[in-house]
Length: 165
Image (cartoon, rainbow, N blue to C red; front, side):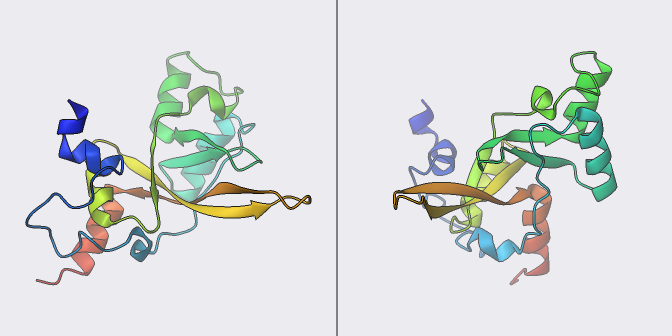
């Protein structure tokens, strides 16, 4: 059934172009959004400190990334506050207790059309860029780096500012 859903197929990279009458922005790359550098939290940050940082910096959400670069999840201001107020987490708990570990990732080279499909179901997507890194012994591995967090408002702002009509 999922494989019969074009939007699911696009979101998961199995289809590219399914919309017949695509808007002018559909094939533009995500990198054209000119996202600001993301606010990233380390896993040991407390819920209290995460709330303070998000409020002070004016963010609704931030990726939680281990020192190794592994993306652990996303912390949101509303989920953190709700969890603490409901007693499911304490202000002193590590932010990893309240993170969303189910989130969508999108690459800088992906299209705004793919992003649009993701944002129909998700409030945000993490923009990642894969980079090859080498160890001292010469072996290599791919590492994902968080490039930003993109929301429907970011897409809407881009489309409205650059509307070709």
